[in-house]
Image 1 (tube, rainbow, N blue to C red):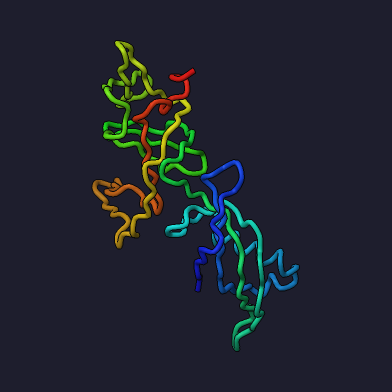
Image 2 (cartoon, rainbow, N blue to C red; image 1 turned 30 degrees about the vertical axis):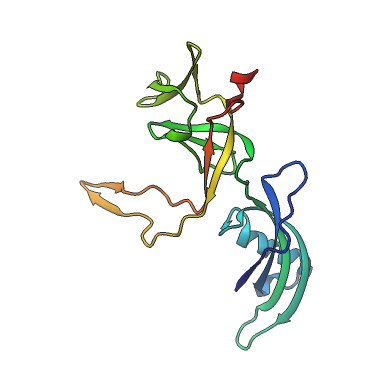
Length: 219
């Protein structure tokens, strides 16, 4: 059973999009790890459980920061594992609304842009939050691709896949897990997916302000 403690959500120095969050977790330590130093074994199990996982309302776990306490060590009848109550802190990726972050363009569609930070790819800039005025045109370098172009004082400023893009966080959402995450049907020997993969954390970004968009626009 996991308990989320919001007793330590301090922002880490230099990178405001990362915060520390304190967690309490009842951890089962498998028998094959009992010959290792307790702190090392516990940290390894915590990393396997939490790294690269999204915790609702807290964000994406990027590292185990430290272990505050380890209590227990009970072995239940018929079970060779030890059970501990562990309090620890995680470094979470959780940007706040209004924060400005630099990312790379991952995908450009008629619905807007998809951006990537390398370790996190579910950042979307919808059409209403694109720089205005704008138009779209075919991307000759990518089949069926499109390119968004900002129009300013008679000049066109395209957004390319090679661009570093500065965006403002408009919102962070944690969609509920759907009952059915996807359907697969077989027709004529081919497999077709109806629904795109579920993302437990979504960031909505905005480019509609001075200084936002490709950094090349502002140098």
